[in-house]
Image (cartoon, rainbow, N blue to C red; front, side, top):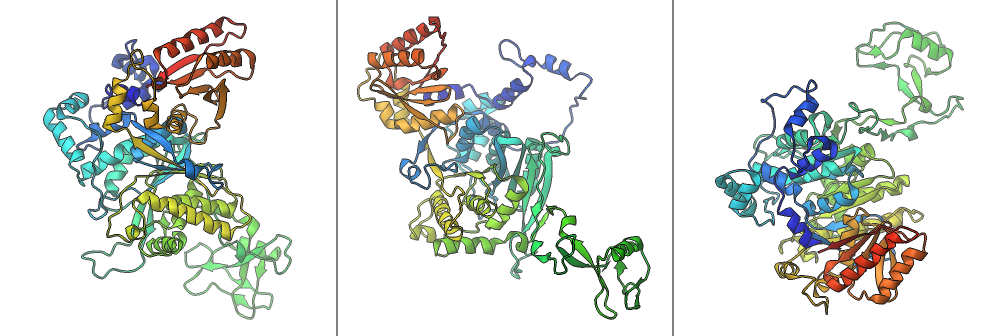
Length: 629
């Protein structure tokens, strides 16, 4: 468990993450001792790629450190909020809210959700100098150790540590913060997945280059301009800023890969009510369109109305259709002539228009809401002002979800803030009866005592986010009493192991330690151990777990894994376990996972010997025993 991960992390350097990925794709380029063979790699690429020394990329202080952070496994455990999760509205929910550092959360998620997320939206700190961003991580490296891991000199290693330990809001600090998070997020996306990132001018240029490197320049989809305010600030020194950006990248661009890549959805039409059929036209509902426009078109003819009036195109205007098209429309009775000298209109049938609209890169406030709308939504939900500063409007996130996902997909936001994304997912599901699921991640960032949110009783940002989801769900139920969509969520907290606990783990020796009060298990809690293992083994946060009794001993069974956590395993439990394997043809978990701190050396030996005997029975059962510390 944690001790195993800490030991593994000691061998991580800046290239570990990339080497792991390379071995998955080109294992033939690795030697028996697990070293990368450059000659084999160059031979593999010979004649296919021209390798040059010069290149273009983003370089910043802390980049190698950021790469190493992506390779380190998380040393946190996952603690379920049992009281919250047991509530009727939450117990069957597949929505997830994680309180904790999003770098740790992404590492946990990768174990169960790799290549399963369809759409990611994040609104990271903009590093404006006023948004409170100061990068400081919790890792405790010394300059000498960091220099060795990153193959840099100690002076540069100290500069990196100053960047991350003392706290910095520099461009390098922001990039060091964002790099590992985006790197891990990329691997969570499905091949047809997409990520949307909100940003402003302060880091927009750096973010674009960073995403080009991580996702690939060829996978850039669009840069959206969102009108966040509509009022002009006459106090502005140069320009009154009216917009933010939303940068969009695909995991794979479908332009390059027709089979696997991302393909944007059309936006639903909002003008359907404009179509009707007052004259019972056999072609169905229609609306009238002018037959002229401002744009020049190479068509200049006259139209003769049934009353004999001959019309030339209006001065300064142009016919929108060719003479042949108009004559055909007249013959098929698709023209509305109007009175006297008025210009006729042509029928546009609902059946002739596309099912939806191609999204544009300009999101005005009418189309996607603005800052004022986002603030108003939160104020109404909480019946209070200034609970959260500048939340995004749900309409903006709904538009992105409509473009980037379908009705059964998972939506991830690992800078959840006020949980606008969760609100948008539930609201959109209620509108179209969708079954989208959300995963929200938010650090338990403390709220200053002088803030309105603190005075209202909230101590951390994640408390506001979770309360918003509860209130938004209540509002959606009231507005849609017959809805059956998932309006609950399960809550989990990522907890770090303190120094005292870690000292206990380090000192534990199963061959010497007498297990009496099971101090280690009490420090973690059985549900925390089980939840952390289920996610680690790929079953996620919504695993279907069965409680299994072996005599008086309680174990947990999930598909191919059988979990032994408690310390009261005895001879009767051993006999019952063997009988279960031997007599129940439907019971065949391949992996027996043991919480090492709960088992003495004698109990371990009893398990190993007896389970080995199953291999020589008629069923020939092979069980892998994995002892975790």
